[in-house]
Length: 307
Image 1: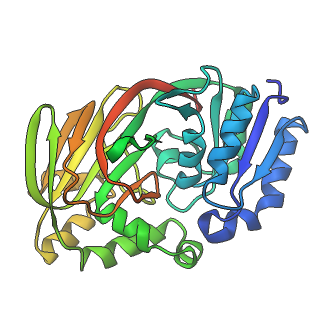
Image 2 (image 1 turned 90 degrees about the vertical axis):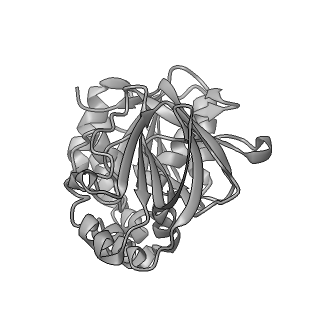
Image 3 (image 1 turned 30 degrees about the horizontal axis):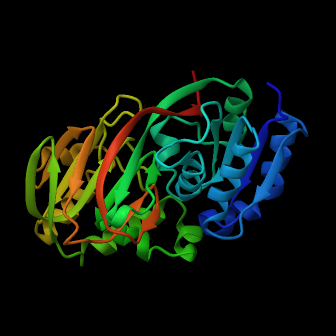
C-alpha cells in the first residue's frame, strides 16, 4: 500500500491526555509499518478533527486515520460528509483506537493493541459500513454517527464524565460514571415514531445503535451490526433503583434484554418529538441542538478492518 495518500488526525487529549503522552510510541510504530510517507495533523480543539479530515479528503487524500477515541472518530467521520452526501466516494477510514470507551473499535472487531491495528491499516482491507444521519430543528446541518446515538442517561454520562476520571480509570470510567448516574437519573417523557408507530413513555434512556458495543464494553444492543442497513433501538423505561442496579450488572453480557423495563426495536429511520429534550450524545460527542430524526445511510463509509 502506498503511504503517500495517508493523513493522520492525532488527538492528544483523548483518554484524558494519555494519547498525547504515548505520541512517541504511536509514531514509532506508524513509521515502522508505514514508512515516512504519511502526513500528520494534531488537534487542538474539538472541531479540528472534522476540519482536518474534510480538508485532506478535498485535496485528494485516500486514507484518513483517526488516532483517539470514539469522539475523535466521530469528528473525522463528519469530515467525510457535506450537505447530506459523502464528500468523495474514494477515501477510507483507518482507526488507531486510543480512547476511553473504544465502543466503535469493539463494534467492528479491532484488536486492542496499536501494533495490530496498524497492521490492519497496512493490509488495506476495506469493508463498507452504514452511517447514521441525524437531522435537527430549523434545517441546521446534519450530524453523522457510526456507532450510537443516545438520549437521556447516555448523554448525561457523556456530559458529566471528566478528563481526570478518563485518565485515571480508562475503560472503567464509563462504568463508574454509569453507576453514579443510574442512582440519580430522572426519567423523561419521550415521544418517538418507530416503524410508523408513535411511542410515548417515561424513559431513563434511548439508544439508537449501529454497533453492538459502547462505553468501555457495555453491550446495550448486542445484536447491532454496522453493515445490515438497520439500527437497533433500545428503550430503557423508568424502573426502581434496585432494578437499575441489577440491570447494570447484566449490560456487559447483553443479558439485560431479558429483563422487563427494556424494549428493543429494529428500524432504518425514526423521528423524535423535540418538546422534551434530555441530554444527547453521538459517539461520545455531546449534542446541543434538538434532534428531530435519525436514518441509516447504507454502506456509506469505507473502513479499514480485519478481513
